[in-house]
Image 1: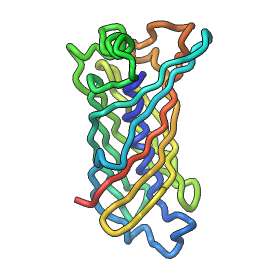
Image 2: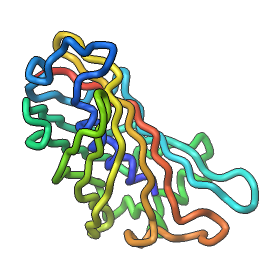
Image 3: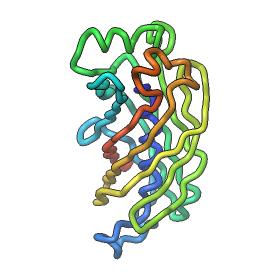
Length: 192
């Protein structure tokens, strides 16, 4: 479930379009390679439950590269998440998520997202589609990205999306816990 945060990062790329508050900024001015930084970034997720409180948490370790091209369609996003870094604030839940029932961190060391298409949907928003890979299974994934900030040498995005966990063999606890993982990410990146 948490692995889906990776996909959200991909959505960031879609946000590469110039925001309305900075309409004077041309996308060509933002062109370049950006590395996602832990300072100012967060990869949060939530899974609802029919029995009341669901599960929410974040990943503490991740990396990524956002390549912005003057032609948004040629831009790309790559994100890698370390599933062993999952944090929910509850040791019992963290242990379960790391077990072979969900992330299987003893055998699976990374979750990855690679974009295949970035499509601008507004002055500061985009849809990013690509492939999310977790537990040796790869599936298409789509995220929404909103450009939050652009300054010399840095760029930030708010990325959201929903991913089904069952195609990745992470459906433990369904139907009490939703099959849908909701992602809410803030991604800040610095020019390389």
